Image 1 (cartoon, rainbow, N blue to C red):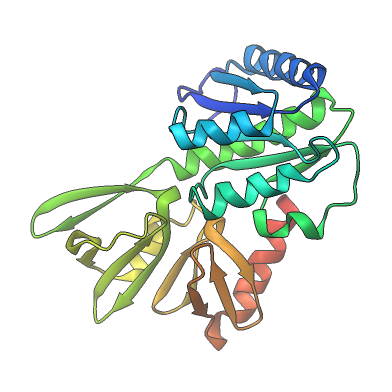
Image 2: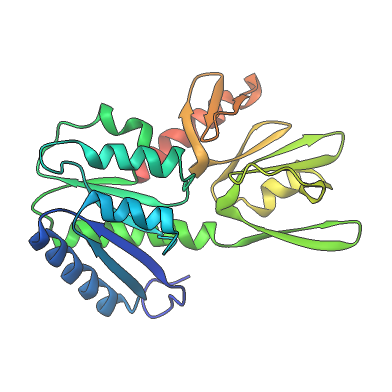
Length: 253
């Protein structure tokens, strides 16, 4: 996919900051990026953390990206809402971009797994690079994975997949929806799926596990923790490969 004149998907963006001028400035930057790259954005501004929180309860819009301030009236409400988005609303696919005038929040943001952290004042170049990186990932993750069970075809969006698990040629799909259905299990080879998804940020950690990089919450030497808290072992054969992959991806972020 090219990034100029070839984006046909709609990217839904929320901006939440109690300083209205920041919302207006960021909205203007996003509109400029939209026009210059011929993207398609739907932008909604929130001037309080409560309004954005309520939109999740009402299920008004399923946002792809949220630019979220950290401090509201000198309280770290942005971190609180980020944790709710991940753990209460189960919106792991949303790319959260924190914005702040301060650089002191590294450890506090860890559990939220933000996509990026922008320091005010916000410049066009920073937002443009962030949106281009997000769109690359969304394009990959929005691609459907197709499989067959008893002659019937099913699809699941890649961003919903946590990992594939293989057991005696049966493949189970674990998803962020945390719903187990009979159609989640199909016959196949995990090596074939790994080859099929080689350009979609899935990687092997074991001969029986193919994992979605974007749904990993934490990497350890011999295991990984997924966003649903499933803990998967990295076999000795794959530890060096996983470590090199992780270092490469961190360099790209």
